Length: 169
Image (cartoon, rainbow, N blue to C red; front, side, top):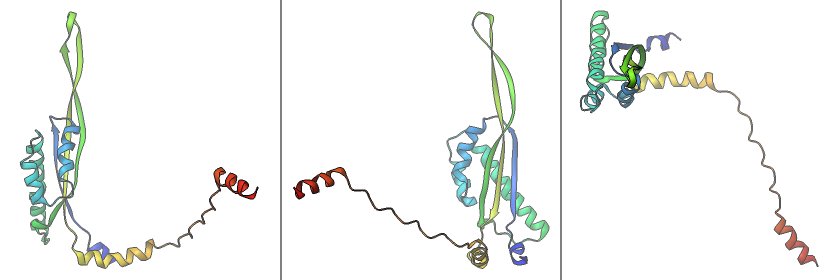
């Protein structure tokens, strides 16, 4: 168990709160970078045609800077080239209620949505660390499996029955 705790992967996050866009629009950009390497994610967001692209890029760069700062402060050995976007989430913030003029002196209410963007980066696990943990997890997860159910014999169709009756006469 101590070995697993030592191999724990550190995550570094950055947030951008109260951004003037709906969470749905922000998720379109964030879904494209989930699971990517940091360098590739930066290129993808930088050349995105969406309006939320620059905001997401800023948050992603902030998460990378957080990783380098914390690694220097705590003396961790973190390779920035090995970082991967672990999670990228757009949560709903407060809504601003606004009023728009309508015909005949009436008013229509509408809502301006705000979003909170959270990006988490982590170092990609090395193949040796995964191989060391895998045998332990297989032993724990292994359970006896049930034997496969036997198939019932197929029923004869009515056409076959009539053909056999005619042959018998």
